[in-house]
Length: 366
Ligand SMILES: Cc1ncc(COP(=O)(O)O)c(C=O)c1O
Image (spheres, rainbow, N blue to C red):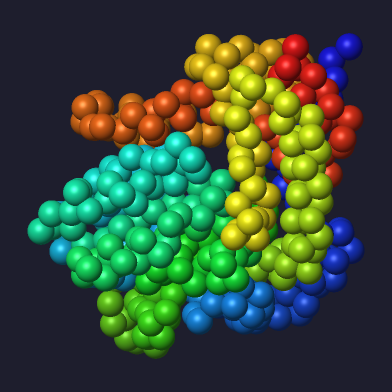
């Protein structure tokens, strides 16, 4: 018997009635986009929820990354130190801004950028560090902050995986000069498609507003060259609905994660994510490190045969993607490549059933 498919994630939705109720007024106003009431309200509510100084909503996380890099006005050809162990968006956003990504290896302990290796990569062209809180594992922000201060660099965090987390009681989105969120359908908190930039400097708000709205200041004045990065009202409405449920969503994800932990911790040939008590996690992902690439691939194939779609997030590392044609292949990124060859991200979402977790775990250990 073919079991019903289980994907790596399943988008969370509010109740149908909640969403319909929320979007009903749009039929009176006919205001579908262009920074409408829901856009404004979601910015306010998220600013409160995340306890961040400023926030600017965007059409998606990738454009948010591109726009914050652009807003920093770095000279073309500047270097940005970043991790190759991430979704390609992080690397693409640097390159599409005319900057050069300088890849720094990761730590085997939590797969985030190895802060001890950052300083040796700094040149007179380096302008910023762009680390990623991969799987919600928060980077060593204290040391990254020190390095940035010592070397006069900006820090932009890709916080796409870290929605609502805190570390040492500090909201993760308030770290660095700016932090970028993704509200993609697959994320812990979604607006269907969407993203945001959280930042400290108040005057960035207007700059980002211009960048996401063609630089339009008034009907007849376009003051700068911008693009279109606006979030529409239907997405903002979805965000407002989902925000009401997100704490419950995270709680349910935590329960599923603990259930996996119970079933898999006794295995010596796989490594699970360690609980970091300094971090209030959002349980966005359940990554498992296998003993070898062969072991990982066997499990991946076995799960697929049973209609279970775990994912090799992130394989290959971005530096080794086909689009870079081997340019970075000689870089010392051995930890990133080591993890990438052995990682598997298991299905995790709030309504994943315990029987499904049982089934997945049985297949992994068999
Ligand atoms: C680490 C990381 N950065 C950036 C992005 C891009 O976000 P979006 O899909 O909202 O454009 C993602 C999305 O999956 C991501 O995982």
